Image 1 (cartoon, protein in one colour):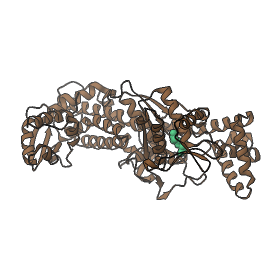
Image 2 (cartoon, rainbow, N blue to C red):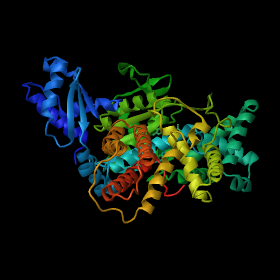
Image 3 (cartoon, helix red, strand yellow):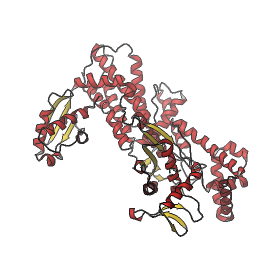
Image 4 (tube, rainbow, N blue to C red):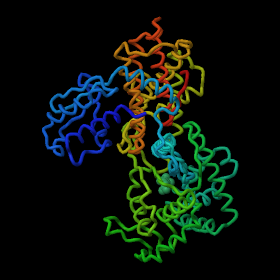
Length: 569
Ligand code: ARG
């Protein structure tokens, strides 16, 4: 079923064509021009006609007037009025009940979805922490934006492969091996897990400040590891497993799973072929002993491929990994979610892939996001001085448990619900912002049950469930709008498909987050002002149906932003 916006845009496009214009704008660009006026007195949708004035060679006022006529008779339009160069459109209540509401109920868990990705594969590289370093709040972005994008793609029919490109290779393992042999033992790591690994790593750096020989030892151990030394390989494997076990706890709390954990180490033997290809294509230049690809023609610093000692670098591995993924998954799109600090890195190696002649270079997409600070303090990325995601989640869950007890909510004794609300609060708060914006994290704001927060929307979802539990057997009747709150709510629900499409197009989960808030607000207004079980057949039937539709939309939308929808809070 076409959305209201699409239907109106189609009709307007016809109208414009009938005005005798040669190059009438496409339906999609008219749809993009349609606005939701802030003041309902100006209608439900409005077309500002000023931009059209140039192509149509007519005054905006005139355009609005003639387009008003062409909407007459369209089933979803109750009224179209030309006002000062705007075409203000009011949607018909009958259309809302007879078409939109029934459509939502019929489609159920597919409402809002699309088939745009049918037959296409998307590979998403996200989260990807560096092993033996703590999983801190800086990783929240890549983890939850990445997973939301995966969910959005899946919802729109794409086959998705979620890849955790673990940072499981590099000189830090040499350091860890040295530190472990000097100051660690098996029992301590088995007990203390990743925290002990981090401690060893930090201690290595402290001691190396006065003992320069340590760095050389570390390099030698890493070299041995690269050569396949059995002892070092076993230690490395163990360190990776310990770290993974810790990450899994966080992923479990977020409801995230990956399809592949092939990390940087996996590409060690796949890089030489790409380096050779670069050489053959004449793309490699030697600069002070290092091998680089000159990108000055593209206004970028050179892309580093090999260090002076011949060892590979971050871009080298990314190139080899992309080639492997294309050969393995034949992706139609490969999405990389990292902090904006890595934007240049991605721009550089994407360009190198293009210069190498890989025809899929234009299927690589980098999705950057801004920094997070807590209570105003920007977070250091150096080991030791960071806010761990685990601790942040724990604090939120503790807080929520307290609030639930205080409010004496239905699920006050259910630990898994306290966890879902606490973790959800952080995720929701984070994903409320446009991803590229730097954000300052304020815990009290995230947890406010009465604010525009995760707990508030989860509570709203639970409220729809509670209403529906009470309303069994009240389904029959003819739907009709009898209160403005009902109409506003259905109109909000009608926007879900276009929100999903916009979030996907812009790689912007926050579009869904803000939309969920709109739904929650509209539902709560409806809930407070309209008695659902009012004893009148049609009115109750409509209100129950509207509640069911809200339940469907929230139930579909929340998982798209890594949130759990729970029947009770
Ligand atoms: N491990 C890297 C880091 O923590 C992120 C990896 C991102 N993905 C990639 N293909 N480069 O900074």
